[in-house]
Image (cartoon, rainbow, N blue to C red; front, side, top):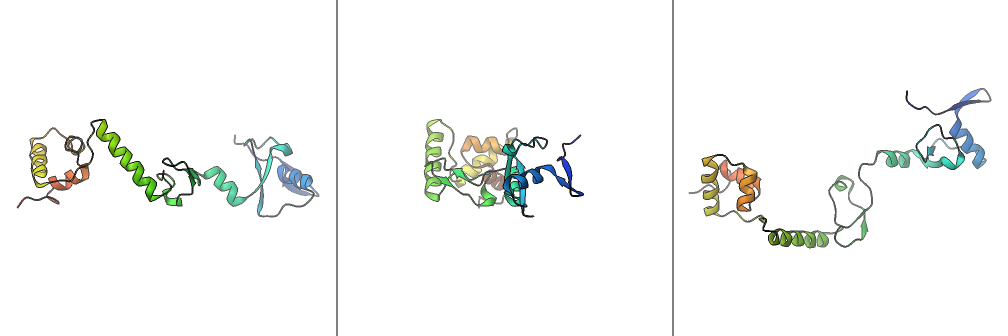
Length: 165
């Protein structure tokens, strides 16, 4: 059974106990825009110390936020606010930090012997198409072998890019 907020009757009207106790604590009526948040998320814990006065927008953001509004740059350590649609993926605060991070990642790939995505040349495209035609190899594994992104290999194999003349 889901937890429900406790209710009481005050002057013949049913009210939430948490709102009533917060009004008594503050000595004023709560505004319709104000909401009483239970800090420990236990709706039955009606200690005033467990209450926090907030707005509906802030309360919704507190409970529903999947990705934080403020992040720390993975490159320079400065706090930043990513665009709302980029919160899941953004890890750097600026284009400069992004470039430094990518450059460091490329150097690390090269040092570890992993391929860094290369430009597709005509000779490379022919070799890739030949290897793919032989079968038994995926686009991703070809990409890892030749250091070319698998989407570019797929376009080459389908004849959408690097068609030999």
